[in-house]
Amino acid sequence: MTDYRAPVDDIRFVLEHIADLPSLAALPDFEHADLDTVVALVEESARFFEDVMAPLNRVGDVEGARLDGDRVVTAPGFDDAYAQYVDAGWGSVPFDQEYGGGGFPWLTALAVQEMLTSANMGFSLCPLLTQGAVDLLSAHASDEQRATYLPKLITGEWSGTMNLTEPQAGSDVGAVATRAVPAEDGTYRITGQKIYITYGEHELAENIVHLVLARTPDAPPGTKGISCFIVPKFLPDADGAPGERNAVSVVSIEHKVGIHASPTCVLAFEDATGFLIGDEHAGMRFMFTMMNNARLSVGLQGLSLSERARQHAVDYARERVQGRAVGSARPRGEASPIVEHPDVRRMLMTIRANNEAMRCVMYRNAAAIDRAHHATDPAERTHGEAEAALLTPISKGWGTDLGVEMTSMALQVFGGMGYVEETGIAQQWRDARISPIYEGTNGIQAADLVGRKLPMEGGQVVKAELARMRETVDELGAVEGLADLAPGLAAAIGRVEEASDWLLGRLGADTVDALVGSTAYLRLFGVVEGGHDLARSALVAHRALAEGGSGYDDDFLTDKITVARFYVERLLPESASLAEMATAGAGSTFDLPESRL
Image (cartoon, rainbow, N blue to C red; front, side):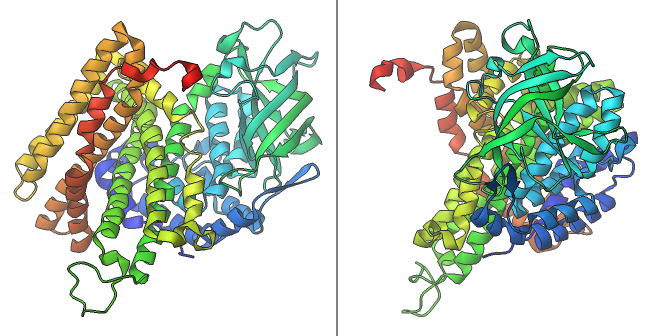
């Protein structure tokens, strides 16, 4: 089984040159987050995840989590690894220093999160859900609630969950039926059942803080009637320590295609004690506070799993000998490692190019979130908010679709052995399959991009993004050795613009036409964003090769140019067909009656 090797140099390159960490470090909130400090943090966390988390990935998949009476038992080694994770403080990196956090940019946390998820996605979901709880409580809880819960959640001594989904309420959160009845002491009594609760029960942390959507008496129907409550597994005592066990219990855990190490629970609340967050009926607004971060984190899972799968496939392709490659310099009769075969090389380059493109787009997304919250210039904050809003559904939808496709492609490199579980490559594919589904299906992401994000400021946010891309085209055209990349990128940008104009027009005339094309449009935007960012990478690498002293070796920089060229030549042409699909209208999509589908 291949060990995971964190791509530290690639991460540093994107932090420095694409996401522009140095400009974030110039903000007053992030003066301690200079590039050298962040790179040192990335390197140290990389060692931890390679040594402690990655070896448990296979164990978690094979052993999984299991239900033992009213307890969930996690896979062997997870309890010790979690304790080490808490002691090292890796979960605290981006959070408020007032409550024990590191106060680093979200961009830094995303880099750390990429490596943790690659090393062990099943484990990573516990800190991911805690992260969401911290985000929501930081923004909306009372001072007393923040003082009680945030310090323990930020350290990881306590973990968090998000309880939205019910058997009858999946993507339609407005159908939530869990009840919250006021009690005389100012608390609420929570009754209902929640499903798909990630790490809803376990014994890794000393307490679990459930954030639960429920309806108070006489609440209006739909999402406007939903409130949000803190329902801890153990009620904190007067000193803030875990006290009496609350009336929340695990009913079962799901048997899933992948992420076997992560206990996905059905939870029952039976007059459990809950504490209202903020005002009644504001629950959905509170949940949306943490959506950008959460959806970006799920998008990142596509990159993380694809990166681990790529490393495994490359190692196998170098070792596996099969046939003599066409054009091989080897003596006749001597077989070649399959890495020499053209189609295997195509697959490996496709995975690598897509991974590097995803990393660029997602890290820029994180940097936009940081600027939206921390920039001192109001105009820069506004721009950060708009950029994050635009990029988030792309990161989530395009990133997780690619995660499934690229892990499947990595499995294909193995041939028949890829379909045999003992090689381990299938785990990455199975684990990746959930990511296009949860945290808002990718169809919802596409509808959000077209229905909400494209019309922002009358379409001007998208136009500004495309104008920024065209500046890169102009830069490419002026650089000998890269100018030949400019026409392909320019054409792809033009296709996004034409599709954007068409869809914006259809939103006012026939929304169904626009929504049928929305998935292709999201893919189109992602493919072109990725191509643009790799073109920028090539410009940086070209300049560094010419000037020297960049801190990266020449092979690394040359590879950046080669990967960008491959993407523009081999992957960016997909934009032509995607643009046609995005603007084809509903056409025959609804011509068959439901009974004959």
